Length: 233
Image (cartoon, rainbow, N blue to C red; front, side, top):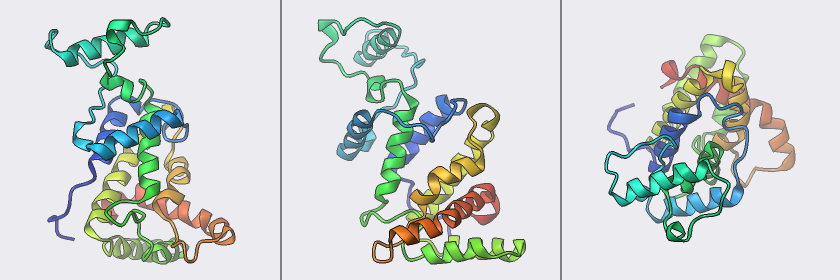
């Protein structure tokens, strides 16, 4: 596929960047949930203007002590170490860190929520409805070489936005899995979390029976995508 491709959605880029900065060693990363209200609040901020959402790590230091951002960040750092209520003079300032309450699980929850809702103008799953059966079929192929060739063919049938997004997510999840002795999130565990999110059947054919029947294959397909991302993309 040509590299003249669209950009990965900004929300995904920013959430992944923070996870890789501060979350790789967090046990249960992507498996554990953050506060749902904070996740929804962060989603809404991204919807208003994703370029203005600044996800800053708790230990971020600003060189400009007099800047408003510096004040916000210093206050957020102090707040994270204190159990006291917010002083009146800071009550109207929203620290960038407060966008996710210094909880990386809020950021991962925001990312998972965004992916569940679908990407692009039509809000379709990353692996698309149209190619759902192709991915499921590929995961059922017994012969390793034949299975890899089929997966590569299907991956390269994805629309540009879906291709770059899936590649970006799989590369990221593989890096997360490299810390699995610490974070307990192996490729298999990550695939269990992301299988039904990245790979979803069309609502026309979706049913409780179908979802249960395909769940194992969904997870197996995503596990293959993560583990073999360098070859497949």
